[in-house]
Image (cartoon, rainbow, N blue to C red; front, side, top):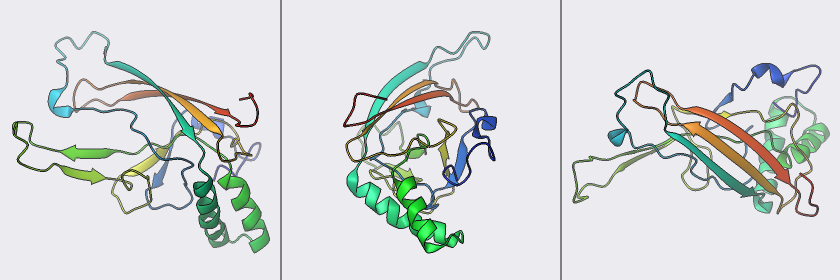
Length: 199
């Protein structure tokens, strides 16, 4: 969508930081690198919140660098050709759009992974139950009741990526004090070309 609809006909800035939500089987969203864990919340061991008037101090920040993978570019391009043709683009136009899209970045995708384990089982007799919204380790598509969320990082996708280019993302987030609270995030990103020092 980000590659199909661009300013001035569509103003992505109007989203005002609200991420776009995707079905985890949506082939229109592809990854350029293997995923990494951004936050780890142990809901059985949340810090006490005795004073609801004080600001949450569970601030965390992290900087992650993703390396654009050559095989993912090729796989993404093949998948995107089919998606664009299903969207009724002519073959030549779909192939060009898929080529450009497979070499561009719109934002940093997020999705949850839940691990259920009895915290009182200190001897680890029971194997934890893992609930993955996308394929663990690769971020591959699969059926899920959860969604993948994608904050759009710029008005237009950053294109012209090649294997070896670096995408650096910084995350600032506030962990919840209780299961009734939500996390708050700030995400920033930069692209570093492998053949230059520009970003």
